[in-house]
Image 1 (cartoon, helix red, strand yellow):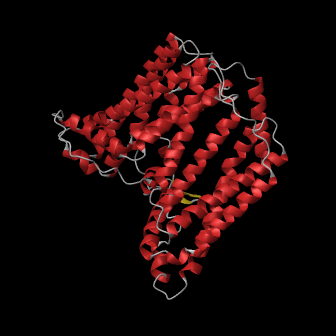
Image 2 (cartoon, rainbow, N blue to C red):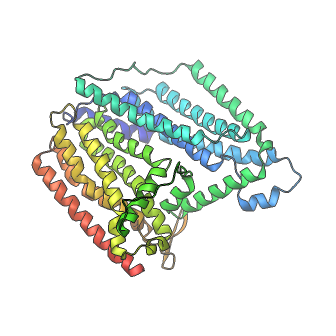
Image 3 (cartoon, rainbow, N blue to C red):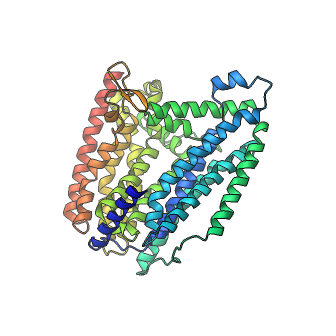
Length: 470
């Protein structure tokens, strides 16, 4: 805590000494911290709902589920470990937020904020486990996803409207929470955890096995550092189509590829929400007091938001990479399939990047130039989406290295950053625009030329690789 506090205090000094922001900062830091806390809490609830939360691995279930033993006592250790993990994650996520929420953080405010985070984590674990024991947790992940989307979109809209009106968003000053509030929250969290423990004996074997299989899949993907498999493990089921579509306008093979990608994007339950959050994140960072005056922070917000959009747009390509026989059904070469797979990510990147640039530029007098700058960066992020989705699997046949997470193939880090590297490199002219005080027509032209050059190079490289693999 002392090391993190010193680092954040240094960041606060840099914010105080920074020049004027390139955009109007209308969101107080306390409001942004509260939105981030709500976003993190919703993410934890989604993960817990996807993993059970209480589950049993297939090996453990095959050993002790058939035994005539008290299932509640056997599952209590799993609930305790899950609670400890949730509390640890909550403390790590809440530490920078409690330091950034107050203008002059004190020991009481920091400890109060961390206590609130611990109480919320226990409530999340106990609440999801209690709903699981009562077989009522089916819509928890969807509700948490809606809350996460609102936590990102509402501040972005409020900050943009305030910038357009020349005002700032006013919120009450955040003070230290009274001790009785923390005590009540701790009692409520403990009560939920006790009720969840009492209902562990009602969990049936089918639910435990389903959650255990998902947890094992996600754990294996995490240990092998395969983010694509981890995303598949935590993804929800697609939305079933309400009626059949004939795609009458599809007459050529490349159009069939594009139509397939559009159908996958539209039927996903999470992709549209991810795109809304992706467009809002750069706006929230740019509008927040303090962060908006740091060009690297605003640039990092753009990278985070546009990277999330690239991840959502590349889902169809990731599924095609997992089942390469699907691409061979089309009467197209491997290079032509790669180019066709890039149409949907390009359209998504154009929409999200342009919207983010336009909203960031509201109130600066150069909203159109900001929108053009975001549009110019879109090809690089479309290429990043495709490069990340079609990156090769880790090569386990070569040399391996020993790490705290286990044995991993050498060079796995270089494999993981494929896609991210193109997005970061393609957004360097954006950083130059933020550092120099705003976009200019010359920077927009440089950004467009650089992004198109990177996108062309990525398409050529992916086309050659896919041709060799096929």
